[in-house]
Length: 110
Length: 120
Image (cartoon, rainbow over all chains, first blue to last red):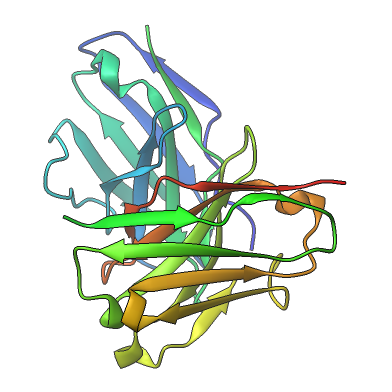
């Protein structure tokens, strides 16, 4: 199973919006509404930010939103804040009881 | 409060074995799916495998790179899930995270991770 494709980096100024893409295939992202996104600060464990494409767990700011079109899912961070600077990973259920992660995107707040 | 605490990491030679433990609290353990995810130094996240809850058959699934070498099991009396790693390779060097796998097909809680280094 190949990893999902994410851009290695993204950036934006405080207050701006930034969107991170996650491209897979019809066997994973395009085939199921089970895309989730994780935020990871340096030397910390990942944290769930979005599940089932667009749902936010309790406690996650509504500045974080998710969507999907075809084989590509997206995470949008609106009103960028300094604490949003982190690595972001997408993952999708990939059928046959498999999971696949994206390669990760380093988000820099300028 | 959900807590996952991993232990058992360390240095092991290629071809050796190691067993990681993950002590869980804050939820009903026996019906929950649990997963292991690893992260090689400076690299991204990689799914290792999962253990389904007893009510879903208690079966396991594994990623291709570890299938046949790694085994996930649990001891419900201790609220603990294990990752038995055999025939270790240098490319298995990583921080191993224990995760709770939710009914929404996402990893909703993570442990702090334990480092496994495979080197001679």
